[in-house]
Length: 115
Length: 111
Image (cartoon, rainbow over all chains, first blue to last red; front, top):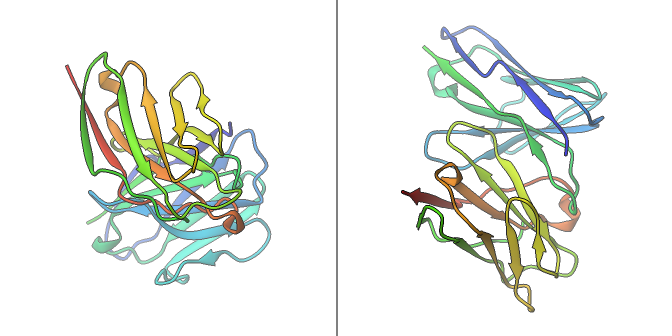
């Protein structure tokens, strides 16, 4: 299956600053990648679909101007949390590949802590 | 995704088989049943998927009932490293590769 690399694995930033998270598909050309968020003791929630060469599609309630997604190539999508606040502290996970009859593969996640 | 129902938690003794049930009574036609697991502080890991027939791979077996309304994931010899949250997901055919995660089953493998 696809190998997905996510970087950084953890980051601590101050309130008001921006943080960029990278998701790389190492062996699969991905026209679509997905970004999920997971708060403590909760399940994963889909935030947005990243589309290579076009705008991302955001789920209801996710602010597109706060969570900037760029998918400039078939192997890289980035999520930038702008003007981060403590409530943005969460576990962010990207996924690659799949269709209704083949599996998605996930990165190992990025733990963001905003102080 | 088609709604799935799983018990919130289960325990299993190390070395014994872990049988994790999932109900998906609204599953239809060409929709597959997928199982993923998430070990603490890691991204989800794909385990297995199936449509109608039982499936087996190096990680687990998947038993799907004949009416396809429920399935069971079997870890034949559970180890401590199998402690994780296990998610049963039935993606909607039209939704492609978008997944909706429910609460899953928290499996605790005990020595």
